[in-house]
Length: 456
Ligand code: NDP
Image (cartoon, rainbow, N blue to C red; front, side):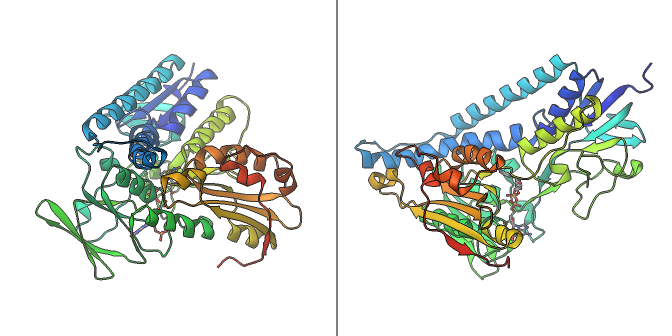
């Protein structure tokens, strides 16, 4: 007889936790998952899914404007936020039910409440203690707000997904994924948008040429950029807010959103009771099998702060279950993972930036092309696409691919397969393009420049 109530107790019912639970249960393990909020986690409930639905909604505004260049007579259109919010909430609710159904049919016990580790093999939820042979931490991360006067007046991505009405004027603090994505969403839905970022370019860590290009694109889309400036304070002014910038400027807006990074959710979990180490940011370091510093405790997803993307968390959860319950040791390969920022236009990439490629490989050949997409010829929109490939000068292998374009996320997935398969520039050149398309540029890039710049 099993000495424990469960073979596996999962804390957190998001992407990683749910996948790990289902797969472990499929191997015959007795599994429980505790979730304090709603099943589905950040991605389904207050991240990728609702964000992408809002992004689609916002794109129609631009499409209506652009359509005039193609002969459409468009009467003045208006947008009804409430019906969008209802439709989005209902889709999120449907997906939550799907998650619940998947766990139910896999035989996983779902326990609603905040779980804490109470002892070596003990987890406590709502005052009830359960024992488990293995524990998996999959608690994700939470938005972090800069500690400035008036910080409590700022909203985060959690709250902007549940607004009752869109702001007429919004200032978004930060220059990362979430800031770029919501700038496009609110602009498309009719708000005046300011992006306030402490750096001189958006999207730190991305290829420098890409960073410059997307900054120019967002500015061309009438997002008002305030770069190289900090936010000193926020003050309420009647029904609006004043944002005091380090530059001395004061912005009058109706909403201030902090999109300044996310912190792993490890506070109050009781990790110290089992000797699970956390780093200075609160993330749980793990080995390549997602094992923590405590032998029977594992962690997957954003709480480990490796590569904070939903498909990565899902893969880590699946690999954990295969390893521990399926007798099939499996690791997640964090190299060559494609990613996309759903800004407008989108930014997508796989592999190395030019700067990383030079630092790791010495000399590289860089191919890039910036051009006006065909659609913009008639719409009149000031829009430029960037397509970029980086090849190893010694082996011809493609080390990185980058694109800034309307459907960049859809394009990069196929390119990522080519890179995973070790494609060379010669392979790209031997591939015939789909014409006319933006994506064909990847197989027609000529005129390399050599780059040996060292990473600054
Ligand atoms: P990011 O780490 O992408 O960006 C945070 C931004 O906030 C940076 O520009 C950073 O500036 C700035 N910042 C941090 N602290 C401060 C501060 N105290 N004052 C002013 N600015 C500050 O975080 P996000 O919150 O946008 O997203 C979190 C993560 O979630 C992403 O990194 C990504 O992994 C994931 N995500 C993925 C998405 C996708 O796949 N499409 C969508 C959304 C999120 P600096 O660069 O100078 O540090």
